[in-house]
Length: 405
Ligand SMILES: [Zn+2]
Image (tube, rainbow, N blue to C red; front, side, top):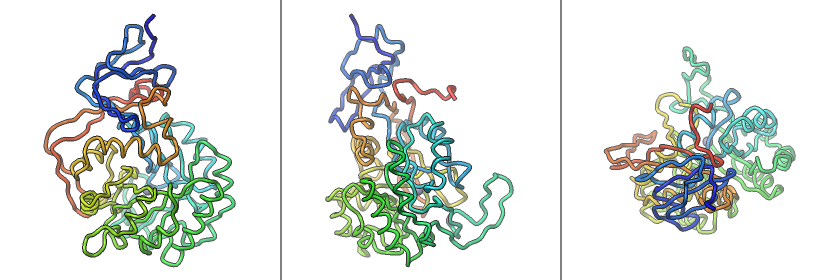
C-alpha cells in the first residue's frame, strides 16, 4: 500500500546542507514531521501535493536574531508577520525581554505565534531599552505612528546601571523555561553599557551562561572595547552578532586585514553571526571577510519593525541574496540560514534539515534573475543578478497560508 502523506512537495531542487544533499526530488510530510525525501515519492494518497518544479526547496529557514516583542518594546514586530511569509519557520528573539517581562513575553507572544519562536533573555532585568541617538533610531521616531515627537538624544541603555544585570534571576528564568529560552543576550555598545560597564557586563553574562549550561550572544557593534577583549569572554558555542559591522573595533584591522583573534575565535567554534539591521552591518567588511576566508557562520536579519530614516532592515531571503552577491555560493548561504543556525541554537536534528523525522518545515524559493541592489545603512552597495524570492512555506507539515491568520 502506498504511503499516506499530509503534504508532498513535488519536483523541486532540494538543498539540505545538513544532510549533504542537493538533487531534484520530492519531500513528504506526515504528522507534522518530514516523512520522506526521494526522487519520486508516491503522492496518490497524499492529502495535498504541490508542484514546485523549477524552484528551490530548503529546510525551513532559521533566523537566530530578531526582535519580536511588539507593544512592549519600541522595535518589536510580530514574528508571524515577517517570518512565515519569508520562509523562516524558526527564529530567536535576541534579548527583547529581561527576566521581569518574560512571563508576559511567553504568554502573550511566544505561545500565540505560529512561528517557532525561541528566546535569549537579556542580561538586564529591564530587557532591551531603545537608544535614541542622532543617526540611529531617533530623534523623531513616533511609536504610535502619529506625528513624530522629539525625544532625548541621551542613550539610556539597559546596562548603564549594572544593578539591572541580575544574574540569579536571569539564571532562574532560563532554568524555568526549558525549550523556550536558549541563553543570554548581552549588548556591548556605547549606548547600552558605556565604556566602564562593557567588561563587567560580559563577565556577568558569562556567569549566566555557565550557570545554566547555555550560551551567550554578544551584540558587538560600535563596541566601546576591542574585539579581542570581547572574545576573551567567549567560549565555543557563544555567538558574536553584528560581527560584520564597520565601526571602530570591527573584525578588520586598519589595513583591512582580518584580525587574527577573529579567525581564531571562529576556528574554535565561536559563531560569527550577521545581525544585518541598520548601522550594525557593513557590506564592505562582509565582502572583505568573505574574500579572506571568513564568511558568516549564520546569516540573521536582526529584524525589527521599520525604523526611521537612514536605517535598513532586510528579510532573510533578501540577505541570502545579498550574501550571494558578496561572494558566497548558493549552498553556503542556504547552510548559513538553515544548518548553521540550527546548530548554533542547539537544535541540529530538529530544525534546519529535511532529514526524515525532523520538524516538518520547508521553504520554497524561486531564483529570480534580474538586476538587484542592496544597500547598508552607510551607503555601501551590493549588486546581484539574481535573488531568492519566497513562494511557499511549510511549517509543522502544513502549507502556511496568509489567510489562516
Ligand atoms: Zn538585535
